[in-house]
Image (cartoon, rainbow, N blue to C red; front, side, top):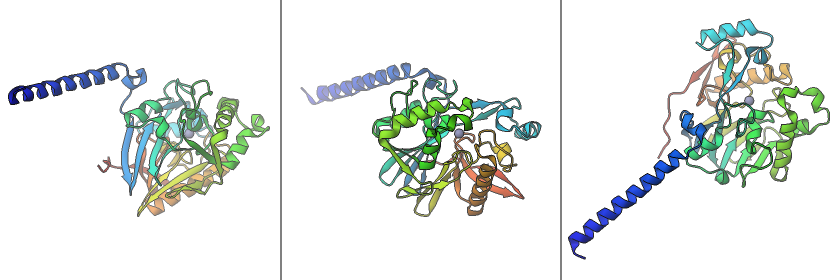
Length: 326
Ligand SMILES: [Zn+2]
């Protein structure tokens, strides 16, 4: 083969290989899950010190205002209107968080589960794990902040029979797990929360479930914070790397127009409402005083920003878009 013909051959081969990979990519896009075709981009990546943080959306949930703010419906509507939001329902995002820390890949909460297991708009997490360049089998740990549907049910398939993270250790607070497995649970928890489904998921995870006390460090750089009231063993999370920190709310604070302006108001899904309000105010106060970067599970995607004290209330200040280091 002459020099020219060899070069021509190589170029032709490269072009052909390019055509094949492009064709594969198009096929892959054409076969992408329906939810991915109709969805907005749903992951957001940045760094906290040496840790890589990727917020992964599980899609939104929608609730009647009376469900979330039963004692303050009209006042809550006014707060929503002030923020240019609908006044007939409240949309809550679900921002799960994938963190590279301590040599491990940790998913903090797993969303509501695929197939619209909890609500039809949710269940997008697996699509966005793939879009972010990861696979479920790469995840070493799923840290479950509490047992509600929108944080736990995503560890398993639609039938609650198969764990979706085959290599993950599951970590949860011992008080929380005891609460959901308690015989009195059916009396103490609303049937709307479907405690049997939560129990089924905890049972499925049991062989790989590590119980901790809220407040424990689960990995070097990843510490839980006891924020009880929403549920008995509810945890928030602190990521720290070098001088940088990220506070993950979970459900200690949920809706920014209402909860930040009136953190003392009872929230509909709080199990122990006075204790939850106490935890909420303490968390908001700490984050505002320390000026810590915050990741809010139910705040507008990607839910990263700062909390500012305004008199006896608080204000949510979204962070400017951050780009991950290469
Ligand atoms: Zn929640």
